[in-house]
Image (cartoon, rainbow, N blue to C red):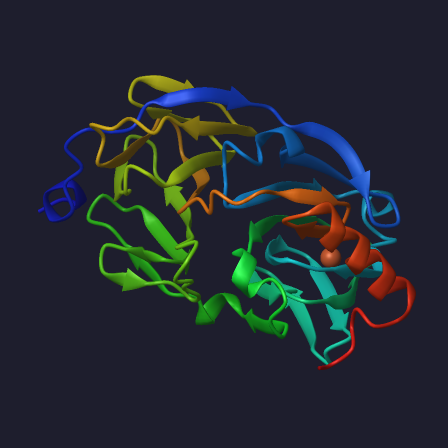
Length: 291
Ligand code: FE
């Protein structure tokens, strides 16, 4: 029995568009590639941003991200290699390293820092921003970090190693689930020639980011360091990813909120007035207060 027997996807979604992302820097000068940029927020609702960082040059990451605020959404950091220390105004502290995931729900407000704990070597990973529904934006912050060994994993009959960061795949529940946005976040390691099928509700927005090797989706090649936005084909019941070489990819999907998105830097709310409120709360030292 192979995976497609166990969880058949009859019709795969197609690739609507390939995106290369934009080289930029953030924090105190950390070099990164913004894969999911501002202009794709509506299309990929409920996701607001995906940054990929990866360098063996300390100058590219050493300054890290000193104290800065967030309000209105969740940040999910997946650290493939390297060591980063997180500290925040809600009293959480955690060392993120080597395959670990940090899930931070900023909600009404967190001020935090993310500082590298290494002076050389490779630092590589991803930060995804997931929006919160309007009714949850002013909830209390929440935080958890997961060591790599704590993340749910399985290997398919075809040898695809799957890490279920959020959501569900082939009956395996992810480290985190969310009722409203229903994020599904998988890291897939595919040997050359292997296929992986994932069921996806037609209304959910979905994308694939290839960070090693090359895959094809419904006959379309997706090369390394490209995001494939998957079409919301009404007849498709999922996606089938085929590895053209040994490949590593993120498969991310979620249920769109269909609410207004107003972003000002690290604040993502529904109205301009709520942004002004966030700015004044931050200026007055009220943003990171507990209750
Ligand atoms: Fe941050």
